[in-house]
Image (cartoon, rainbow over all chains, first blue to last red; front, side, top):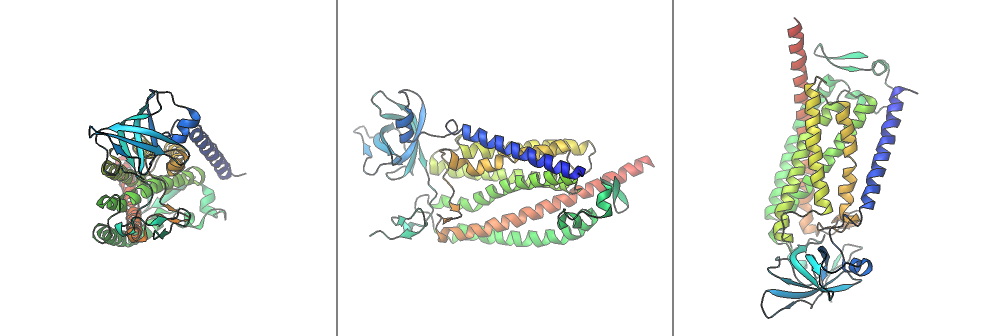
Length: 148
Length: 270
């Protein structure tokens, strides 16, 4: 075997081991590296009240209510499997609205309501001009269809 | 070891087996460009052919992205940063892939130009990674409501930027220590190890919940509407051609520096 072939095998073996180690580390970090908890994670894993976390999901349509003081809002966050109520006092980002993604920082209170101290709007991977707004988007075919 | 000569000057060493007959297993390209003189003959015109079309495509793409395409239904005008942000991310990651391939060629085949190529890629790669991070931050403020968050995509991209800085520091140190033109084996190994980060960046939005949105363009199609998507193709190709031109220019500059260095040493010896 030539020295060159030995080097090639050594380099490839090292690369495979490295990538394997990297992927194993990444998958071990699956929970720790998650940027936020989805409502279903909260339900299945359980988050104790008072623990500072981020909660991410979609704002349920028609759930957004403004309290009498004018700065406090109540809304529900869902990931399709579970829904949790949340409340926030302050200025929400422009893109925060019903039916859009949100990441809220805060903690649950004893009654299971998420008290957010900060709101971030999460943008999804869809980009389209205003004329197409309100059209139905097919996730599998990436096609837009007019709403009936 | 045989001594490689360029303009009558010793510029590098290569094993004898390479000078005799190239093993068939080696890629044809590697043989063709193993000689720096032959590489330069092709690199000079190729730089021009990459630079000007690249600049033209970039200007057309950026112009159309700014003035022709419609605003996004949700983001409004800020969507236009996409035409810079996406090519910058692509070249930041593509640059490190290039460094890893060059490192493999340097370590395994002892290719004389591989180290030069690795060093030439590092600076523009770092620059595009920085552009990606900055444009993302500028976009994040109005869209998400934050300049920076430690989510998987942003953190792994920042790690890539730091890897570039480390690679540049290592490569410069070894170049000063007289490893002509190139980078030491340690630097090359660093380049290979750092490549682990590339699939992590790519998958970060799939593996982990992240603030950054998932991939818009996949093998199944694009969730960016066609009317917003087409200038991205132009800027992506334009930036890539420009990147190629910059790398070739830097490789030529490094080879020229080595030539000066070699001549100075010969003069000093008298």
